[in-house]
Length: 133
Image (cartoon, rainbow, N blue to C red; front, side, top):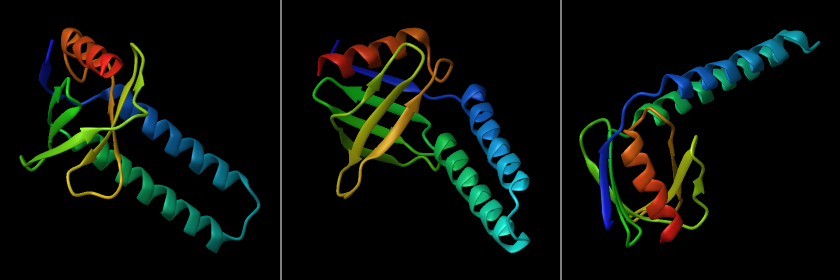
């Protein structure tokens, strides 16, 4: 197995977890005895971060991963970005997080993969490549 290519689908479980975390943050902020201006600022920040996380979760559309640690990720607008898989990937049957650095970028990015985002066989191949490379 030298490479795997797959189309990534929307994950309702990931979105539900994200929205539950945002709702918990809102509940904690509203339950604390802070001034209204501080509450509003914290809630605005939490909303902005949740929106950013939703966008990041929905952005990747396809993925090609090679055993040589080369990765290609297609974004929502159809452009492909090439990069290198970095050390620190997280591999479990229920969650795989690919840590990669796009070519020319200074910072690493994380690509979470949950069951349902690709076929079971494709996710298994991705996990095998990440563990063996």
